[in-house]
Image (tube, rainbow, N blue to C red; front, side, top):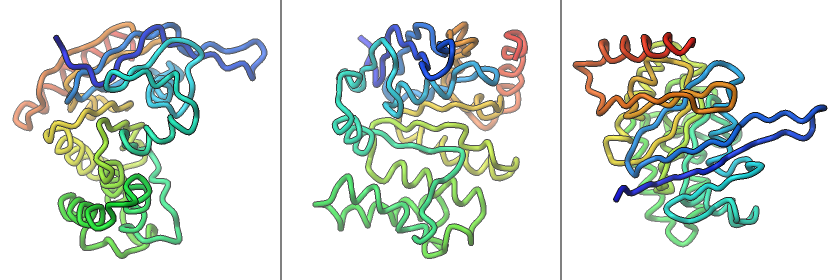
Length: 253
């Protein structure tokens, strides 16, 4: 029996604020195994970010269910869902969304301390270890405008991991970065995956998608295809990227 970290069934999302209402997701069924690195791809407007927000509890699906670690999170009220996001989920976005009045270290510490207020010493030690591990310990006292975009995104990964979440969600984490910074961030996420962490990521970049164990393709709010890739290795990276790109082109990407 497989151990699923995340399962969603019959997931739909309709925005009623438009006239007529706009249905973005059309009955999505998706399972993510524990320790899997899953990438969601699709053309602009396909619904991939809406799907990510719906399965992570950042937005409420219109219908269907989402189970995290075997628990139905779609039935939770807002307060309970917020607690799940804080304690069991980590998030990395295209923009870092750091507080400008705090330095890098304090921005990473803040949500982790909120999630574990009685374990402050342990949390501080964990955060410092994460910053060192991802190569930004030397800039932890810098302001957020004093570091590079790649360093900010690595700090975002530290923030996502600081609360020891069960799953990390990433929405276009390299979308605003150049190629060298993109490689930095993807190396960091690959390291997180190598630790056994479950990752679900939305990206438009085939090279980033090639890092995943599996890629699913979304078109007009429907999952239309998937590609199992196996474990990423640096030695096979170029061939793997070519294979992913060829598959995506066959789907009209």
